[in-house]
Image (cartoon, one colour):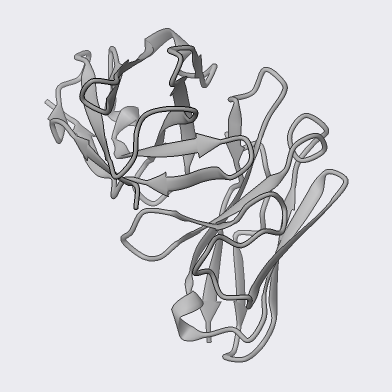
Length: 117
Length: 111
């Protein structure tokens, strides 16, 4: 059974960089789109972007200038960096495995990141 | 910001049938398959329906999905109290939108 687990700071100061890592267990990082999604408190889901196992990336145009994702196949991990954060970036951040045929079939439990000084 | 439109709420009594609509465009639902996610209170979303009408292992057959043109729908037959949750449709998008777009979400209440 594939499992994903997010890790990283729960509090980030405005203008700084949000950094999260997702560790994948029970499977390997191959042939899938490893994705990040966020959900502001009380609101809906927003796709942030993905990194394919080959290393190619695709991001939400609304966040593209501030987002970077990376992959560490040796550790079965992928990561998210979001720069110049503001209070509007406060959200629960989820990592997930995606494919064109099955959508987002495995999700992490989510981690709340609060942007505040 | 959501590209796919859903009604904000739906409700029914136990045993009833509830249907949720999802409206998109030619670049997403019109040219790609639709997925549905269930988010129980305080938990992460889980995949409920993929490829318009396929259920992952473990999802009860009370849940069914369909698609026509640029719209899709999720039906819950024999509504149960544990079905009270938020439901999101989603699809890959071929335009300049985000590569994967979600619906606005529908809160299902069991009366």
